Structures are given as C-alpha cells and as structure tokens.
Image (cartoon, rainbow over the protein chains, first blue to last red):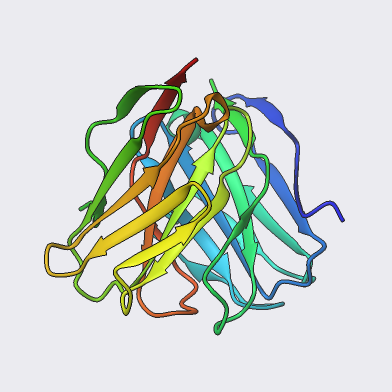
Length: 114
Length: 113
C-alpha cells in the first residue's frame, strides 16, 4: 500500500515550457487535491476533484489545469511555466463527505522555473 | 485574506517540556479543525482534529483545545520529544466531511535534547 505517490520528485523548467505532474493514490479515495506550498504562505489549494471526471477550482487556479480521467490519478498541468510557479507541489486525497476530513498527502514535487 | 492564522512562526522547547502552538481563525462558519505535522522533504501527515461541538480532544501526548467564542485553538504537546521537531499546520473546514481545508502558514517547532 503505497498511499499517495507523486511523479517527478524534482523538476527544473525554463519559462514558457510545459509539464505535467502526476499524482496516484491506491486508497480508493473519491477526493483528490493539488496544493502549492511557498515560504511563509502555508498550503494553498490549486484545484481539486470530487470524483472521476470532475474537477473544480481552488484558491489559486490560474496558470494550471487538471484532469481526473481515472479515480486513482490526478494530473496537474502547467501549459506555459512562469517563475512565479516555482514552488513545492503537494497532492492529497481523502474519502468523500462523511469522513473526518483527513487528507493524505504525497511527498511533494519541487519545481523550479528559471 | 488569511482565514487561518498561525503567529509566532518558530518555537524552541527543551525536551520533556510542553510545546504550545496557537491558531486563530476568522471565518465563523468553520466548525472542524485539524493539525498536520510536516518533516522536511515529506508531505504533511494528519496529527489530531477537533469538532466544534467539543472543546478538547486528546490523543496520547497531543491535546487540542478549542475556544469557539475567541475563534482560537491550540495544540499542546506533552512531553516534547526530539522527534516532534517539525512544522505544524493548523487547518479548518466548514462542516464535518467538507472536502476543502484552509491552512495556516505553519509553526516550526525545534525540540532541544
């Protein structure tokens, strides 16, 4: 049982390049989330999904797109990376409503945009 | 506008003593609160939670206190151990089972052996 895994762990991009971050969970969770963590800013929600085929905007969605084609996977895309997107990205998952709100986090992806 | 606030970003405490972390929130609709612990280069892990119908929840060395009228909660770690050295995040949600969490900026705790 691997929990929540993220690929890749590290990435360096040039401004304008694109990339996709992959999140996978094996806990059969309905909900999945993407956060970014910046120094002194805590965790901010980018996008989330309440089920396969559904996505919704979080607190800071601009510049990102997401897809949830399979229940166990949640992809975060950057179409044209900007230095302001340099951050550590965390994926999380949880059971549907009725649980104790606990979200399970992946180990993070450290992204640098030059 | 930060709805969950954690002041005093860092705390140093001697091993065996009590660590107290504070968290304030502004949204009166929040009624479920969680604390997460984060080690460097790892994702946050759930520590303890409390519903607004309670004022205290205890789990081993960790106790969370909630003061709804003051919109304030605190996490007590007794006794503090070197392995508790980490960043602690306070989080809040509207409703048990609500899928969205608002996080504070985190508190760095250093436990000195």
